[in-house]
Image 1 (cartoon, rainbow, N blue to C red):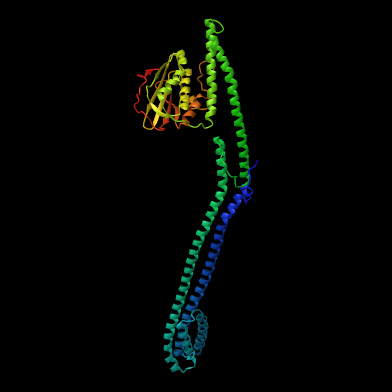
Image 2 (tube, helix red, strand yellow):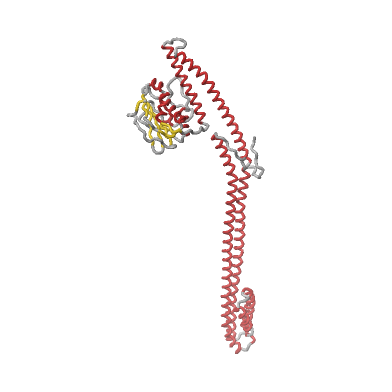
Length: 492
């Protein structure tokens, strides 16, 4: 059944969420660009107006200075040549000066020089009506008039400079305001980015945890429904369906293995019991040839039983069997495993060298015995007839190292890369009528990982050597360990 979807608003699709995120993140940046454009446009307009006014005011101030000079020149020429046309020129320049001064007074309404120029201009306007002697005496008035005109020009320039300073200060204020707006709006964009990133990433992480839960094969924890775009919600529903189907298939596999083990082991036990009875002579004396055939049947039945147990062990380890740590003597564990293979070792004619004990370490006895059983079984199956089998052990402060080495044909580099993969069978074939299942080393590696250890193929003076490394559990109880080299090891 599809999971229940929250009634809170969510985007209908991932595309809609991405587009919405893009628009929302771009909105503060668009506002910032608009405000920056408005501010720059205002400053540009103000600078343009101020520049035009400065040019006009500067030109007008210079014109006033030139008119004052022309008025003085015309008056002095008239005093020399007494030509009436010079007075007309004087009156014309005075009229122009008066009109420009009126405009300049609007720029500098409180400037005393402008007011003084107005008063002096009224006095100079009386010159054409005065007698020549009085006219000449009044010519001295042009000197203060020129000084006031120059002072008025300086005041105009100062006024223009003050306006430019105001524009500069205005530009700095606008710049400061834009910086603050940039910081605020970019922060808003970042917050929106984080928000929408969370809206996108959160359901993806929920799906990732769901997938990891399915892949781990463990008990699924109770979790909430995925909140996000419709595509991800549908994907979560499909994962729920897939999880239920996998659980059903796993249950079917478990049931099949249980039935298979029962269906195979029951008749196999009957076959082995029957062959044992025949070997014991219950049905009469057997010839040597018949006894050899029964021994072959019994040996093959034992190998078949071992293969079935390996398959069941592999299935058990895939379901996270818990550790049961105990302080055990490794030498005793190894000798118990070797005892199980005594007859096979005798038939193979292999010479066994094993380390001496006691060597106590905190291990899972079942898992460690299973590792040793698989390694020794492989050494017997693949080792050379009459060869060597060595079991070595050494310890450090933090780990235990066990090595199982045998003489015989070496493992190729290509096979070595896949040795611990389930159901992989290399180039070297198992000796005997019954072939291997390819799960023995996989089971052994899983048992090592279960104890947080490692199992690896290493180089050795013998052809094949597997090294098991187990970390310190509760520590060793007895450090009085006798380490024996292969050359001086005791015979098993």
